[in-house]
Amino acid sequence: MLTDQGKISSVQLAYMMIPAILATSILSIPSLSVQYAGHDMWMTPLLGSLAGLMSIGVAMGLQRLYPGHTLIQVCNAIFGRYIGSVLGFVFLFYLPHLTGLVIQVYGNFIISNALPNTPLIVIMGSMVLVCAINVRLGIEVVGRTSQVFVTVFFVLLGLTFVLLIRELDPAELLPFMEKGFPSIAKGSLAPAAWFSEYIMLAFLLPFINDHSHTAKTLLGSWLLVVIAMIITNLFCLLLMGDLTDSFTFPVMIAARYITIADFMQHIEAVIIAIWIFGIFVKISVFLYVFVSSTAEWIGLKDYRPLVFPASALCMGYAYWVTTGRQGADSLIRASSNIYTLMFLLVIPAALYGIAGLKRMWGNIRKGAKGGSA
Image (cartoon, rainbow, N blue to C red; front, top):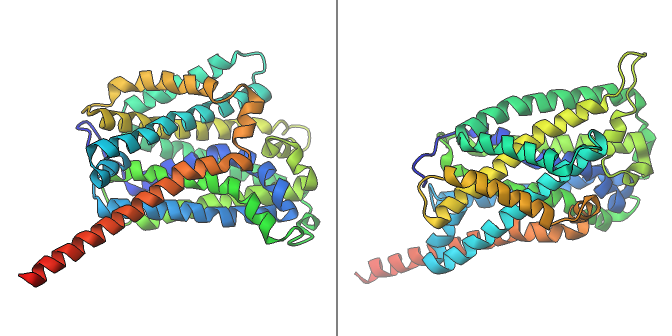
């Protein structure tokens, strides 16, 4: 464990995880889901959310078997120093990749919808710099800023949905199950990939100062994310119908429908504000997990010297993993989400299974020795 770590409450951790899932998904999920599920797109978050439940279960299960251990430390505890270090490096390779993708998507969104003449590096670099400062101040500061920004996030999102109610057409819900369950399952791959990001809990649970209500609190955050995704899909479907998949960011198009008299227009600025608040928390969380895990893997007691170099590395990944907006869009399409699920769900679940078998084998051997004595 790093010596200079603060502590956060389970509520703060829940606040950190909500935008870690919703910030990038809420704008893209509708167009990804409708391609496969059609008018049943609103059901895809329900099925995809099972990946979130599994990720929460794996993270809490590993914490129960190895209390106070992060995922990097669990790898060493299960496989030993050398093999565990190799497996830990796999996660350290993927984390800046994922963070870089988030940064790239953020930059492309801002350029497309707000600042078309601003250089991409300025947009991404300014956000990463602010997030790096936030991370360097410690996990307690990340937790507190999350509480503030997530509250604003939901207030602005709720306001947007309320103003859209009179534009909705319930007939767009029909036909029900038009493409069958297999199509809904395919459409749920994208939400499942985002929900699998709950595995970040495996890196953050050791810093909780109250474990009595952690499970209920995290399940509450999961439920809020599910509801927010379903409502977002429903509003986009009832507003745009089959045209939803024509837009990269359907929620932005939905916000442009809002006009009240002649004085309330251009509500899409609210969506941009929601995006900035959410993405600030998401990048901060992912960057914190990356730098603290790297410090543990190297054997450092203080992660702070790594914050700015790691931030620069994530910026480099943002340019390396994609070649512009089309490249970023291809990496969040449903066909590529198997890659995300492999790193964020399948490998951690396999670790949990191996850890459980190892613990079971140890108990059997202890019982055998006790019986022979």
